[in-house]
Each structure stands twice: as C-alpha cells, then as structure tokens.
Image (cartoon, rainbow, N blue to C red; front, side, top):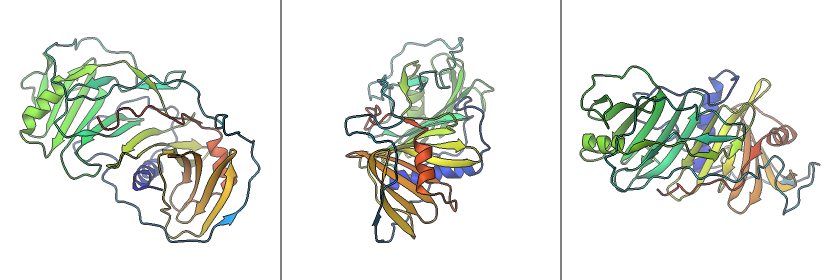
Length: 337
C-alpha cells in the first residue's frame, strides 16, 4: 500500500469510527472549517511493513476472464470533471441570486458534480485533493502533496450567514476577506477559500475567488455503493493517486478504493496470503487490521480493509467488494492541473 493509499485509508477509517451509519450519501455540504490544513494531508505516513513468508491458496469465486469487466465494475462512460487552468480570470459577473439544483447528491446513474469550476490558481500549484463527504466538498491545490509548501483550499457549503464583515464584493456579491481566508456567495452557495505560503495572499485569494464559476458538469463516481459515506481523492508528488471511501455493511465499516500502486504497510504483518478474488490475483493481509488488494491491471489496484484493530477473513472482504461498483479507469485528467 502506498503512502497515498495509507493516508486515504487512515483518514477514512478515522472518519468512519466517529460517524454513525448514514441513511444517504453526500447529501449535505460542509460548512467551512477554520483550520487551513487539508482533511487528508495532515495525517502521518504509515510505517513500512516487515517481510513475511507468503502462502498460496485460492478462494472459489465467480470466474472473470481477462477481457470481462470485474464483478461490480461499471461500464458507464465518464463525463470529465472541470480541470483547473492558469488562465486569467474573466470579468463576467455570474448571477448570485438563483440557487442551483442539488448537484452534490449522486444521481441515479451514480454521477457527481463539483458544482464549480476554478479558472485560476497561483503559479506552481496543482490539484492534490478532492473530498466529497456527507457534510462537504473540499478541494486543495498545492506545490506538494504534504502540508508544507504553498496551497489553496476551496470549500463549498449551503448558503448561510457570511462569516466576518462584508468588505469588497466578489463579482458583485458580498464577501469577507481576512489575511488568509475569503468567504463569498455564488450560485446559492456559501464558498470559502484559504491560502498558505503564497506571496501577496489577499490579492491571490481575491483573484482565485473571482475565477470561480458555477459548473454543473457531472462525472461518474469511481467508487459506488449503497452506503458509501465519503469519496476522497489524493494525488502524490509522483502522480500516483488513490480514490476511496467508507462503506457501511450492517454494523461494520470498511475502507474501499482504487489505487495506482501498492507496497505493504501493515506493521507487523501476521498473515499474508496470495489468493484469487473475483477471478483476479489478490493478496490478503492481517495485522493491525485486515486488508485485501486485488490487481485489476498494471497500476490499477482495488482494495478493501477493516477498521483499525478489527479483523475479517478474506471471504468477508471479497463479499464487500462484490457489492461495490468500480470504474477501473476513472477520469483523472485533472491530475497535474
């Protein structure tokens, strides 16, 4: 498991441990937090696993051929999400009086929307993090995948009271601006952005805010399940990425997702077993928790794990994955922008 996957997994499981099972997914929007540290990037990197002997076995499951889709895999073509460019913001003032349709809840076809596109970010920053949770949408651009360096974080919330005192408007809408944070209204939402390490931060915040436009473009969620609590993307400096979420099955919660690469990270590993899952090669590991990683293709891994200090047999983890829909090749064209 990569550092990226480890960050995602630990963040999701911590969220799951303190969140009751939801009745729906991604239905509400988070109000902006004052903390400027991204939700996932502040977590510590997991330790490297110890070497273990590998046993070989096979668990009977429905066979999937190399050319057939993985069980539960979606064949829906994706509509690309808007990407970030470094072109200057335009001067057109969008309307701020009409509330948009609810584009943050998954549509029947399993698609989501970022709701807004961003037309400008400070030079040298690329998008590193996206999070869709029950209580919010967050995006982060940075010079690195860590909490150090320059960064801008953007959040969307339901319309509400504007924090602070309204100062200069953004595209004609009331806005409050401090040294590191700006809040403004657009398209029936309360938006916020905060900045770290960027020279002339206030001017950069204002330019960032003025470049934001409503955008209803939808994309297929790479990971879908009935009781999916969150969907989180994290991009490493290497370009490797992980996208995952927390699934509730009965009284149990599991972290599931897709990743581009893997190295063992359970420490210590008490069990490591090669097996066949959903007709594909897989590795089951048990240590601080239980995990199963299925190789779908080169640089495309499907994983599921339990909460910390919770253990489950491989058959249970396979059963979880068989109930989840995946897009094996999600649109990640925004990586590097």
